[in-house]
Image 1 (tube, rainbow, N blue to C red):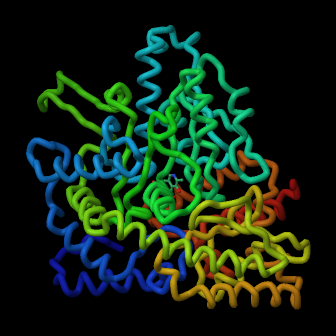
Image 2: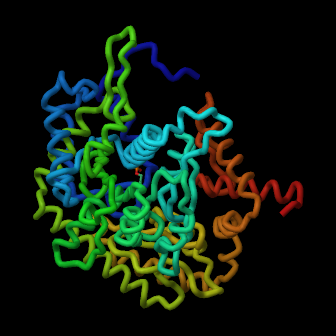
Image 3: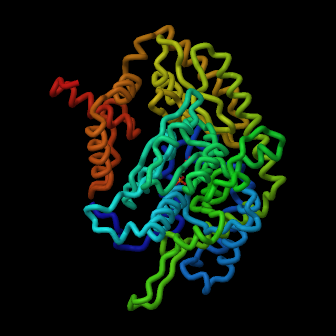
Length: 481
Ligand SMILES: Cc1ncc(COP(=O)(O)O)c(C=O)c1O
């Protein structure tokens, strides 16, 4: 089979094929997904698409060539600095998303520490590895950054409210610590770490503090402006040296837009890259990517400008209204409990009834068309509210209640299908083996055949389910766990 057509295909035909490819995708249009998509209505989306298209071809690789893009980027950074109370001093760049902003922050602090401490000049064998202290709930992009940039990830535990224990962070600091991280909020639980306390600690120890506000950066400030009680997490906290915040999340921009802001240029300067000897000419680059998509930068500017403070306040109010409705509904279901005290529209809930396996609940929700993320440690389901959920509150709560009563009537659901597999996965002791299997699935997905692995019995193609099935097979074969 050949993929690359020998002959031309009409545009119309291509577009129809593309439409067809998407028919089994998660249904975000009807508010059925609880992650991945931030939809603020068709009118807003149509406008963002127009803004994107206007600068679709331009490239922010060279800010001198497209002064328009430089201006958009500058103004997005300035708007963000104002939102995070760093108007007169904070500087930064745009990036392609939360992960890039986080990678940039870690690289920046590593290089800054190297410049300060001269670690890089020590022979490799005795060179101490720089360390960063992160909460257990921190986004996995920090683990990736640690891996890419040779920084040791030191994980601090959470308290009962799913916020990092500041005392534990303090104990973990040593002379190799180059960075402390807190989230506002974290992805798994939606709780905000005690940034003020972390800030005091960071200041006392003279260690930079990065706040990962990728998820909540364009939501929390507007909840606060609406009168909500949000703990301080931005540049008003003196110890905060940088903030990452994604415009493609609650800023409702096109995908590919985030900002990384530093308190001042003394930090940002370590993010830049310059090479003077390349045959292609002298080269400088502000962020990780080479070519930087003009469309995403322009659409981010358009989204923030069109909405302004009033627009984002309205969206935040709507998100919080929906969040309250869903949380109150969940609180009425005695078998379920929300984890900790989430601050915004992101939270997770677990089962507190031994008769109800939360993963069996997820299975039933999925049968009813809800795309639901299963989490581990503790076993729970994730919810991320956007304006797209306004009209699904009743349906979701109804389906959730129904799921509980189905399981009560048919307890075998707790032990069969995906529920059993997820349960097993969460409790498997040999985590290294799981990692190996995860990587093998990637090899399959990115092989020449490129097939997304599916389970023969159910046609399921969720990555975690596939891995779980592999472990069931291994267990049957070797009887080892
Ligand atoms: C708290 C937090 N940080 C970082 C990221 C990474 O963002 P991205 O997926 O845009 O790379 C996410 C994504 O959900 C997040 O929730």
